Structure formats: C-alpha cells, structure tokens
Amino acid sequence: MADILQNVMDHAVAVARKAGEVRHPYKDPRWFIGEESVAAGEPSILTDDPTWIIDPIDGTTNFVHAFPFVAISIGFTINKRVEVGVVYSCLEDKMFTARRGGGAFCNGEPLQVSDQTDVHRSIIATEFGSNRDPEVVDKIFSSLRNILSLPVHGVRGAGTAAVNLSLVASGCVEAYYEMGMHVWDIAAGSLLVLEAGGIVMDVDGGDADLMSRRILAANNRSVALRLVEQIAPYRPDRDDAPPAACD
Ligand SMILES: O=P(O)(O)O[C@H]1[C@H](O)[C@@H](O)[C@H](O)[C@@H](O)[C@@H]1O
Ligand SMILES: [Mg+2]
Ligand SMILES: [Mg+2]
Image (cartoon, rainbow, N blue to C red; front, side):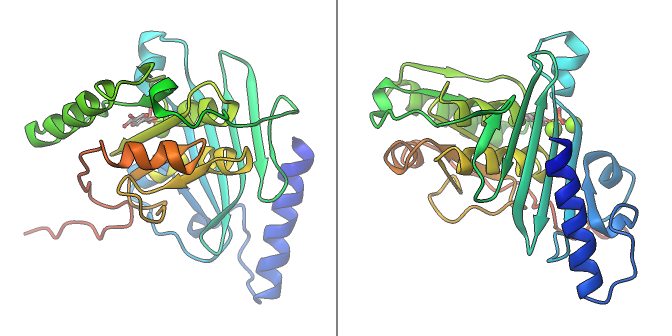
C-alpha cells in the first residue's frame, strides 16, 4: 500500500514539474479537497491538477454513536479522473485499494462485484442523509418505497458512503445510491467499484459527476437502470457551487 501511495505522489511531482509548476504537491492547498479544509473555507474546485480528495472520518455520526462502520477515504485525481482510491474501514480493519487499470483489492485480495443481474434478488445500499427539508425527505422515501416494492431482497445502509461503495466492490450488495453526500465521501470508493468490474453513474442514468453530490454505483448496467426507474431525483447544491453572496 505504501508503495502505491509513494508511486502516486512521485507521479504527482513529475506531472507538476512537467507543467513547470514549482508548487509542492503535498503542501499547496490547491492540490487538496478535504472535508475539513473546505469547512475551514478552502476552495472545493476540482481542476485538472493532481488533487488529493480526503475524508478523514467518513461515518462521523456512526463514530459518535459507536456504530461500528467508520472509514478513512483518500482519492487522487488527475484531469478530474480518479487514478487511485484508498478506503480504510477502521473497525473492520479492511484496507481497500484501487488504481485505475490495476484492479481493486481488500487487504491485498482482488475484489469482484456481484454477478447478480436480477434486481429482485439484490441488496441495495443507500443513506437517508442529513437534509430534513420535507421535500427532500419525501423524495428519499419515495425512492425507498419504489425500490422496496420492486421488490428487492433488502435495503441496507452502513452510515458511510465509502463503506457502502466498498460493499458494492466486494459483491456484498449489488448497488448503492445517494444524493447529498460530497466528493470526499465517494472519490476513492467510486474507483473501487469501477476496478472491481462495476459501474458508476448519475442517479438519473447520465454520466457520473464527482462534484454533483449524486451517485449510483452498481455491479452492472441492468441492475443500475432498474434503480434509475425507481429513484426520485433531486439536485443538492454542487460541491463546486460558488458561495452564496452575502448582503
Ligand atoms: O461522516 P461524513 O464524513 O460527514 O460523511 C457522511 C455524509 O455526511 C452523509 O451525508 C452520508 O449519508 C454518509 O454516507 C457519509 O458518509
Ligand atoms: Mg464523509
Ligand atoms: Mg467526514
């Protein structure tokens, strides 16, 4: 694992030098999008530059309540594409790693998504999120009712987007969707799913967009598209939306 991260960091330095950059890729805030740095006022703009996208604790509510799923999520992008993803599920002691074109692994063992094509025999992961706006809550429950009524085998939520994505990559659930989470919740995990043979798209079936705060990750297209038909979509403010103007 240390080797993978070192290679990536070396790559980041090489890309920077090639571009004539003198910035240090591990220290310049423009090379990071982190939950805590953004909360502290740093920008949340994904550029073509090598960028680390970090969530130090994914599953904060779980952590506070000792609900045993908490993860560290580290993604690395170049040209806005995730090149490396690392999710460490702390209490399970599982280190999930993926490198674009290099497969996905859990503690060094290769991962493969489920081969189930029938949504009725699937488990779907999702989250309720933290938005209590009645219109949003209605959409969440509408999607849930539609999916439960398909019917599916079950609906689950680990309380962390990164772990939910690791569950798709591991073949434990067939799909995960959510609206309202952030880029640092999903950057690393989305590559785990792709490299384990799955797909990642928008909840309306369009192209995935890391900054859109919407994701549907699935083991295959047929399960994903059945879910697209059931999901009542809404559009949270994008992660790269300009800050609201002050009076
Ligand atoms: O625990 P954090 O890092 O805040 O991330 C969670 C996010 O805030 C919630 O909206 C989602 O539903 C969870 O899946 C995230 O993992
Ligand atoms: Mg998070
Ligand atoms: Mg967090």
